[in-house]
Image (cartoon, rainbow, N blue to C red; front, side):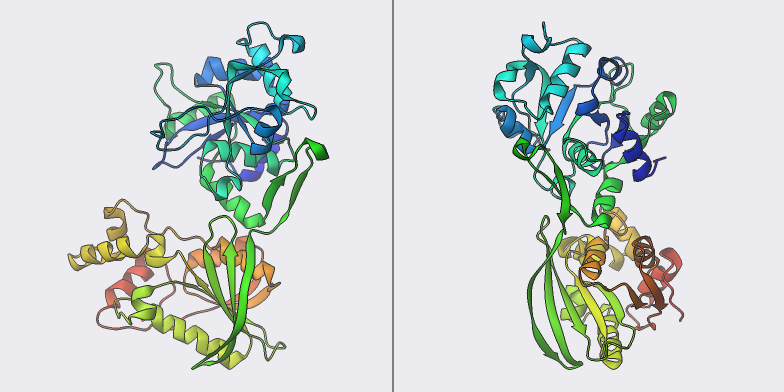
Length: 417
C-alpha cells in the first residue's frame, strides 16, 4: 500500500503534497505534508477542502528561535507531547488582512522560512499553528512533526513543512484503507513513518540545520554511531579488542568484539542479539549462548572478524519483562511468535541499522556472515555489503527443540535438524 521513500522524496522536493502515515499502535493517522518554502494558496486550500484537519507548520527549533515564538501553556495531558508554539500570521505589510485565507496562510508559511525572517514579521496569535520538532528528528520522537522536518532536511529544503490531518466527509479520521483510497483519488505518494526511520538509519546521517546566520545551509555529515570506549579483552577464546559504540540519539550502547591478527583472511561477522536468559544465565529454552560461543570460536579460529553484540534486542526486541511474560504463555502451549502477538507486541521488533552503521564506521565492506536469519541477510543486502552466508549449526536441547522448529517453519530460518 506504500510507495518507496525515494519516490516520496522526489515528489516532496518538487513541492508536491505527500501522505505520511504513523504507526497503527500510535495515532494511526495520515497527514498531508509539503514544504513550507513551496506553500501556495492551492495547496493550503487542498488541505482545508479535502484533508479537513488542522493546518500546522512543523519547524526546526532554530526557526522557532529565529522568529521569536515560544511554547504555549500546557497541562501535560497530551500523551504524544505535541510541541505547539505561538500561533502566527505574517504582518499586514507582507500582504495579510485577516490571515485566515488560504492565500494568506501560504504567505505566512513562506515567511517562516525566509532567511531574513525576524520576530517583528509576525502577529501573535494568528491562524497558522507552529509545532516544533525534537532535535534529532525521528530518531528521537516518532511523530509527524519530526517526520515533516526530516523530509525537508533529506531534500535540502528549509526545515519547515505544512502538515494537516486527513479526515473523511463525516469528520472522522481516515485510517489505512481510507488513506489508500485518498492517495489514489488525489494521486499522492504515501509512505509511513517507520519507512522514513529505516531510511534515515540506512543512510547513517545525523541531519543538521544551521540558522540564518549561515544562510540556512544544511549539513548531513555526522554519523549517528559514535565510538565511546575501547580496550583489550582477554577471553577463553583468545584476545579480542572490545569497542563500545553509542547511538547518539537513542543512547543505546552496543559492544563489538573484534580480532584482526590475520587481516589477509576474509573477516567473519556476527550480529548477536542480547539474551540475558541464555547468554548470562545459561537457559536452554533457546540456543543463543551456543550461537554466541560458536561465533566467537569461528572468529578466533579465523583470527579476523567482528561480533556485534546488540543491546535492546532482548526477546526479539520486546525487553526482558515482556520476554518472561511470553515464556509464561509458551508454557501454556503458544509458540514463541504467538506469545509475542498475544501480548500485543510484534513477532520481531528488532532492526539491524545500528549494526550496519558500525560496520560502515569500521569500513568493513566484505565478509562472511554468520546467520540463519533471513531478516539479517535482507538488512545487509539492502545496505550494499558483499558477503557470503555461513549457516549456524543447530544446537538442540529437549527444551528448545520446538522453539528451533518454529523459527525454521514460521520465520524461515535456515535450520537443518
